[in-house]
Image (tube, rainbow, N blue to C red):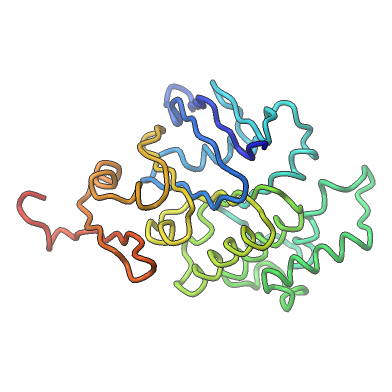
Length: 267
């Protein structure tokens, strides 16, 4: 069985600054795979390398057992969709126009949409619950609505792999859960492999099948949440004291950062 994402000894640098250093891992079909780690760990660089936006200095990215260099751009875009961290809200298009752009990898040179393209876009908007916003412009949307629209555009590509860079950043609790539930539905109902960067360790622990913890461009730990979310591992990665206990949801690990005013002299 082919492996959706296989990273082999990946390294990347910007000038003399190393950002990724000998990173190797694989992601199985239908996994909800979440990348965590402190600021500057190389998470966004890793995502851009997987989708082919950055060429690695060393190593290789393989998608379904084939190196990225073996794919044409349109061919790769039919397999992998990417929702970046920063989405320009002043993009001068309506929601339906933006979602329909997800069909571009399937168009001929003329780029003319067919009836099937409109139906796929409509289904994507219904799935992400933004169909009622179809005629609104992006600059008229809330942060949560905008994120769901960009996910709808990615779904419109009909990918087998969906990559998202911090899709819940700056969202309130309700919108965070809606986005995470949406990703869970994509995994369970459509069999899409979901790869996400997240700064919310507790959400990652609740939803992720596997976690990858990066620090300074290197893998510190990877595995199921119960193996990664341990005090000694997280304290070494984030350089601050934490408490780990069993949360109320299936006894999954719950992480609490210890503020300075509650620390003991040893901490």
